[in-house]
Length: 599
Image (cartoon, rainbow, N blue to C red; front, side):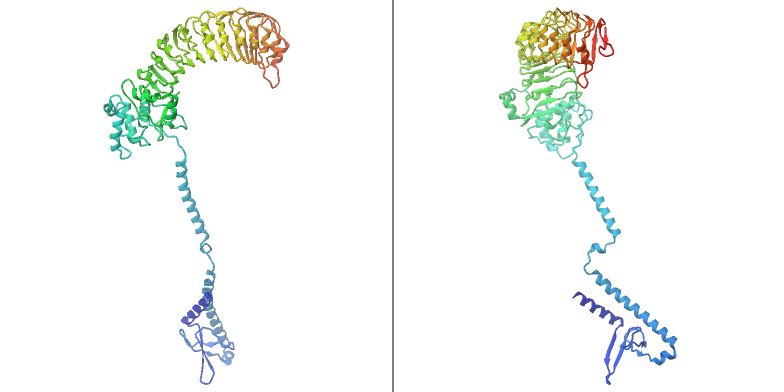
């Protein structure tokens, strides 16, 4: 059907252009040919003679005589008519061919290849321009907390003027000084209030149950900040729930209430001594770990508003002075780490009656332990090392039967080691060296069957014999008794300690022979017997200590030949090699292949 329409259109165009032949009959029956086509021929192949231009023209058939009489003219006319007819026919042919070629072709067949490539490039550029911002948004870039030295912006980030009044009313109830403090631009409370209203990405309303908790934490931040950020962590002030901030751990209030035996309700009724009470949220911040965050200044009293806190870690910061009185009202506190600060006073420490772990090491404490310390008899871990505490500490600690870890080394404590040590049968680690203790180690230490580490070094007034009951402590791994005044012989029972890896009795007054039974303590890695009065030969049984790496025997009266079994420990292929073998110079030993030093 389409081809028929094309043919009809072509015929119509030919007629309009005068390039069509009309055939009619005359009265005599002879056909007269009328043809407007240039160079048309008759049915016998003879040319018509052009009689006019444009429209329908009458042509006469060229007589053969004319061709013979003027052949050159006839030839030129024939060529001219042929050329003209070819031009017209070619024009019509091209148009027909183009129409036919359009049939069945898509738009992609007709688009220029260069144009197509340019379009594709533009599409790719648009896709990249959209994808890059989306990728950046999806990446969790750590939020940068507001700098402690910068005041909150004064202009609101959104229309929260109506919220400001309601939030102020709620926060004033838990702020010392109330509204006046909130409006005082010099206070951390004002900065926290402004941050809550205009900068907090959470945009809390006054009715939110954790508004108080979030406010208290930000007051603490502005008092003691700025803090050292932790890379890749959500800092305080991030636009998420405060329980997601670095160093804050939360529990559901129902879970915590079970642990506290319902004491939360009691706390809500009492509040702080100054009458301040906060709302308890559904997710409570019961654990704060701010270790090594460069928290400076005095310990903020605002910590005490978090009644439900159980764990507070402020170790290795720049805190000074004493603990503020309100802080002692954290009755539910179980863990308090204040190590490595510059604190000087914890007089009311006994208020923490539920405390289980306490570290006050590496501070500036002096004098005797506070009398209230006796109330901390639930302690399992006590770390007081590297201070200047004085007095007879065990008058206080002898009833702490739940103790597991005790470290009071590097102080100026006095007195004797009590027999009550035997009642502390939960002890696993004891470090009491570098004090002014006197006397002996009580035999009752043998009751501490869980003991793994025991150290009393640098105590020149502790002496007598080393208790043989140490050999009855199956879990003992570490025994350090150097630089004291121990005498007599080294207990043979120490060879029974299959887990003992470190034995140091250097610099005492021990005498006699080295017990061969030490060869049974096959877990030994370090054996230090130097600077004593040992004599005799080195027992060959020490060659059974295949894990031994260091052995110190110098400055003793040991003599004789070094046993080959011991020298073999120096060359053991891929196994543990005895790296240090320091002996008296009277011992005969090959310096190149066996002993490493002598003195």
